[in-house]
Amino acid sequence: MAMSCTLLMIKKTVDEIRSYFYIQEVKPTRSTMSSHETEVHTIAPELPAMFDGMKLAAVATVLYIIVRCLNLKSPTAPPELWFQDTPLNHFLLKSCPLLTKEYIPPLLWGKSGHLQTALYGKMGRVSSPHPYGIRKYLPMPDGATATFDLFEPLGDHLTGDDVTMVICPGIGNHSEKHYIRTFVDYSQKQGYRCAVLNHLGALPNIELTSPRMFTYGCTWEFAAMVGYVKKTFPQTQLVVVGFSLGGNIVCKFLGENRNNQDRVLCCVSVCQGYSALRAQETFLQWDQCRRFYNFLMADNMKKIILSHRGSLFGMSSSKMKDADLSRLFTATSLMQIDDNIMRKFHGHGSLKEYYEKESCVHYIHNVNVPLLLVNSADDPLVHQSLLTIPRTLAEKKPNVIYALTLHGGHLGFFEGAVLFPEPLTWMDKVIVGYSNAICQWERQKPPCQSATQSKTQCPEEKA
Picture 1 (cartoon, rainbow, N blue to C red):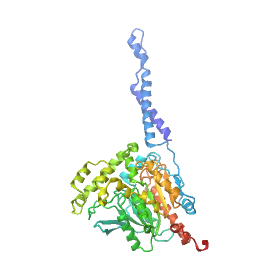
Picture 2 (picture 1 turned 180 degrees about the vertical axis):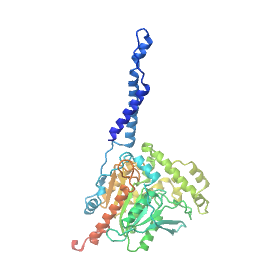
Picture 3 (picture 1 turned 90 degrees about the horizontal axis):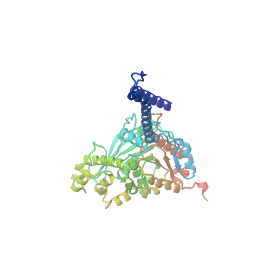
């Protein structure tokens, strides 16, 4: 149907051009015919054909560019999976069928990672709801004030248990972002309590109380939020969720200390890059317009930092100098901002040290709870070379499933028929579906066979 409409449009355009440039053919008499008129009469019928060819070539060129840019010829496919052959993994894949079924993005634009990413970045989500939550303030040892929003469940969980999702958003994000609101609302309706961290300095109406803001891998505020939830709800179990930069933070948090995995059912990380040190070089490359995205994110970071200029540069305990502020104004990449500003919040001596210490790649192998890692092959922010990290991890550790979708962009994963996306994304459904499957596994298995105690033998199994 779409091809037929395109052909009709092309034919209509050609007919209009033909009628516009058509030269009326008049049969001359021998007495009035001149050599010049004879030449005109001979050439005139060729002009419409010439213009037809030019127009068809132009239309064909435009269509070719559209098909290439929108990646329309790309097929749809199920996510590519890496996992070990274990009873738990088989149960999870059976109970969460979205991981084994085709992910079908909107037909006209959904196969473009750039458009998926741009729509996420500009709109977040379509018809985003407004869940009601309570903002909590937690004083930190260094004088900073961590904030998070707490959302109570809107129904019973399918297992009847008390389960809380502790959520860490992407870079410079918070609970008021549309994609977070959409995910929280959906999770609430599935019976989950949600606690969403607001990255330190990300909320425009919350002043900093110390000369420090969020960094790539600082887990202090997330740890404080998790500690509050555990203390306030002693019966609850946790599902840890991280988006983009938040994925790095949650995986690093769980791997830093084994005690951080207590009462954690599972962890889901979506669209993170795993190693900032490896990623820095790729962010300076122009393939997939990565350098352009780098510039846009750097500009956003500058705005956040400058909105807290008084706290970050004016306090007596600040580690920032006037020269750092001058270099901030001229920065055009995240690496320049990280080197001149971000690394100094925690006293790192060099950019390399900052990226090494704050990347989850050095901690993620210590995570023993069920771990779902999700990336998209057309994510313009995460280079393909970084994806060897989750693949290798899934091949070595039985608790890890790595899912790589063909499309989805960076935190897009929109679904829809032709043009308009649905409010809920594939990503939202997968996280909740995987979490439900984990909860069901925990519910139906004896404690010694639970996902979080997989190395414990049952009494009858002991020698």
